[in-house]
View (cartoon, rainbow, N blue to C red):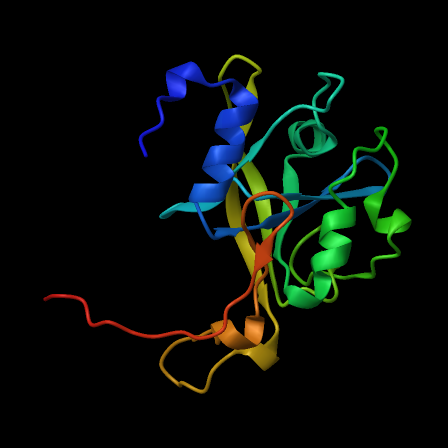
Length: 203
């Protein structure tokens, strides 16, 4: 089956892309709406970009009203964010945090999410997430007709829960199965890891 995207509406293209580019990691992004009133929202158009500098990128659309989403607004105003990797146990609360709220309404308060100090970084992190990245804004690039905001985040600090770190002396090794990361599929579907395997790369 071949599909010509020129014949489809943007919403149809969105549904096709999110069902075929799978699984996708989720950036659960915490930002400050002002006076420590924290916004928390998930984005699955998300990927690492480079290691020097250490950059990640996630894509943010607009609210149904056409307004800029709080994440974009807050990042532009403060220049900071914390990107979390959530696990399976947080699937329900991650989903609830995707709801559209008025600016200044906090998903953290609405879902009673516990935050803790992120050592070495100004913003807090979600206590129950096994991995968190303290980031500063590197660049925002607007693309498309809507447009969509591509937010490039430069990582300054990384938190890794000690319980997901493997036993190796020469470098940090993260046990992916212990992280049990939540991954996005199409529609309302998620996936989790059931096994990992290795294939040697050619020399």
